[in-house]
Image (cartoon, rainbow, N blue to C red; front, side, top):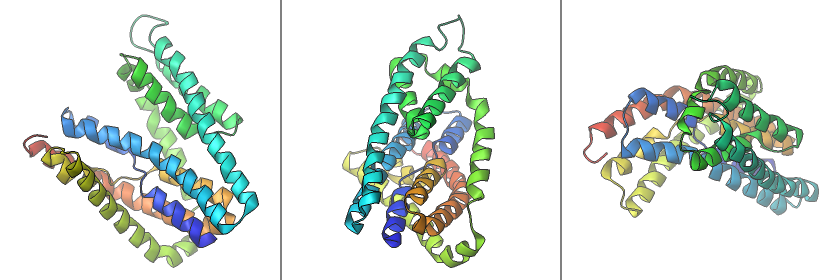
Length: 279
């Protein structure tokens, strides 16, 4: 059972990228081209799909293992997913129409950040997923508000303290003894993730007839891995304690590696795509 859950969690963590890191690098480049717009869109949506598929595979793992109690718990998680999305949309609609409109001028940090914290607080109180609630809220705002860039820009300065706290808490769950045992698995995981992303994006972009720079460099630009992958690992560890050590160790260790080298590859891919004709 532990092996099955570990494989499930790690396979779905492969699909999770780090939108924050990629967004920062795109902003740093100061350019707007089709390659970067596609990169940002995929970095955002693949985390949503990763969460959905992860929950479904967790449910499938529990069912195959014949664990009725765990199965009931994971199926309850499917309801949690739906509730998180509904909550995000419910808060995103007023956020889209109120932020920046209560008072003339650009929206204040208090308005935008207030909605984000309100969504996280309600989701936590109701036992839902704050990260999925925030995603649904952001998609709703971006779809309904023509001025959506400004509310998001106003809270960018608050990102790093929260990210640092998140990784400190995640790092506290890393067991060095387990890392020595799972070191080979971590190496295989990192290599398989990078190769899989490159192969998958290359195949997909060729099938839809995307420009050559997208076919060649999109996968390389998606190497960073951060919060969503760790969130999946923590969720799996809560549901299946017997697999917690391996899952958390491999995912946290690989995140350290991929958040160190991933942005380097992303920057190289952006520069290479920028020099390519048709990007």
